[in-house]
Amino acid sequence: MNCYFCSTLILCFKSSRPVIKMGLNSGLRKSLKTGYMSRAQELKTSWELRYLPPTQFLGLAYCDILLHILQTVYGLDCGEISWDSSVFLELVKAISMQSKIVRSQYHNFPNTFSTQSCNFQFRRAQGLMENFTGSNNHSECHILSLIAKQLLRKALKHQDSTCSGIVPAALAYLAAIHYAASEYQEATRLCLAVLMDETSKEHEETLNAGCLLFIDDVARIVGLCVLQKRITEDHIRHTSRRLYLDLRLSPEVFAQYLSVLSAERISKRSDFYQHLSESSIPMDVYMNCLIKLKCISSMISGSHCNSARQMVYCRPHSLTETDVSSANPTIFKERLLDALMEYALQNMASFYNVIRKEYFFDFNLEDCYRALYLYKCRQYDQVLHLCERSLKDSDLQNDLKKRLFTNVLLLPPLDSFFDRDVQSLLGFHTLFYGLSPLNDLLGKVKLSYQSDFNHWFARDVCTDKNELMCSLQYRYSVTCHYFLGRHFVAKYLKLRCCIDCNLPYSEALSEFAAHKTNLPFEKIIRRFILRKLHVHVLRNN
Image 1 (cartoon, rainbow, N blue to C red):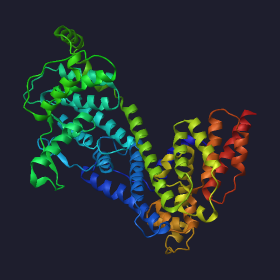
Image 2 (image 1 turned 45 degrees about the vertical axis):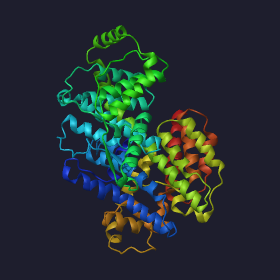
Image 3 (image 1 turned 120 degrees about the vertical axis):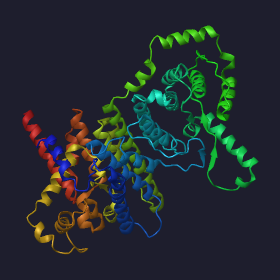
Image 4 (image 1 turned 180 degrees about the horizontal axis):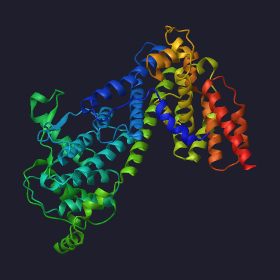
């Protein structure tokens, strides 16, 4: 069977995928809430009511984020939504939102810019950068930085970027993000572009230090300002209300500071220093003091400044153009999808960590999902390692095998972890039951807890147009159709890795074929693989 033909059909048969019509701008936010959000809530409810005790289970927050991310990954991958759409950015802000006690009194204004303007993209990037600080999750910060950089690049590409005065600020923000990622050479290049900019400073955009709290010295300065305000103003000493400070910071001052700091990191002298005019902005004053403390001993003569100036000017606009053109849209999309999937896996691991601690189960189900995704990424060595680790763990008892969270789920959006062949089989499985001649008859009969899978599919999916995840609300005879065991997944992936890497697979095939199962989809996958391998052997002979 042609797996590429199968993979195209899967797009039509996944009944639980939310369809977002990008032309309906007024419905984008509603689609996010009633589409993406409700599906996560439905699954949360079914997990909580059927398999968890009636106590508050904090681990469901990880499940909630996981489902949101996977739905978004599907939408991005299929082109239903774009990375810069309102739906996507609303989701990113929702899962990364951090409480903000300190706000900038000079950057607190409504966004009234046209969606086609550079200022609009610039403000969106600022909104994401405010959430950099406060998150200890590397994947979450990676996602935010990827999107923020791309938004800043879009802002710089606009024709009105120069006259709007955002160019120095956008370049300074980009330099800060590159510096935080230990890309010191790129940070230095961008800082030089800011310092050598000769456009009018009259309407120049200032930086918001609240967006730069991931830079240690900026966070320290803002922290000291907060401490001073709480000490000197008695009426806010014991309150938790939001504080408004003057967090303006000149792009030139920050670029000077960051270039010195980058030079320290790469064990070099600061090869460029530009004397800046005195500023009355408090953050500028504090930053200038830091610059003097850090680099006064390594300051160079004015002749070196001139040589650095000539070095930059011999390639006009090269610094900004190189940075703007460096992000290929296809590569960016792949990196963003990888970062989202990694974040989803981290939330999966956190969810199962909570289950193990609270319910004393000893299994690593998240290893199965990670191995499935790594197989899609062709990282075979890591897949084989995780499979061997899973197979060494003892199998679950029969009563635990019927529990929802002790099995690998082949349900959208969790099917995003699986390879194309398994996704295609799920599509044909859905199509087969969707075209059953008994659906008209069974769809009129009311469902009960004793209803079998055929009855449930005809009534819930075909007649009521509900989603596949609704099967989780029914008894084991229905839910088990989308269960896969840990050991089965490990043996399946081990066999696929051996085949893909042209390794001897007779032992892996024997283990996979001998695996005893009563789960319907395990039988489907095993039958498919054995027939596929049989055809392969015949062709080779």
